[in-house]
Length: 168
Image (spheres, rainbow, N blue to C red):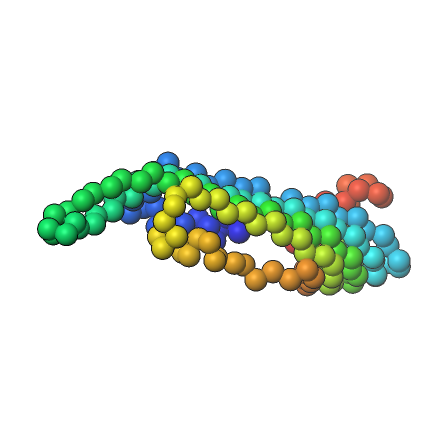
């Protein structure tokens, strides 16, 4: 999410039209629990959370002409904020390949399926419904499904009989 926001949002912010842009986020953080069914198969339970938000101020100048054709200027200050939080809880299975030279290292592949909970927030302080900062702010929607699935490939290293570190 944050990579997407940086590429889209800050390319727009580089024009100088936007004041005080702020993009922050939490990279995906997760916890995996794994129960070995056999030496080659395991059951997994995992939870992953991430979030990001972008906010900025903007000064907009509007020009209208009176009945004599004279320009009338008005300035409006606006504040925008867009945020996304995501939580996934999944159950799955792994196939474990541990026939390697290092007895503490093993490779695995598997799949998981579970929930997908998204919380999306949009705040704007201007009163101009036709103004489009860089996307249609009020109708911008992400397509989200309540179900998540993923395929995993990774490696894990045993620190002890009960604790392992992994990389996917």
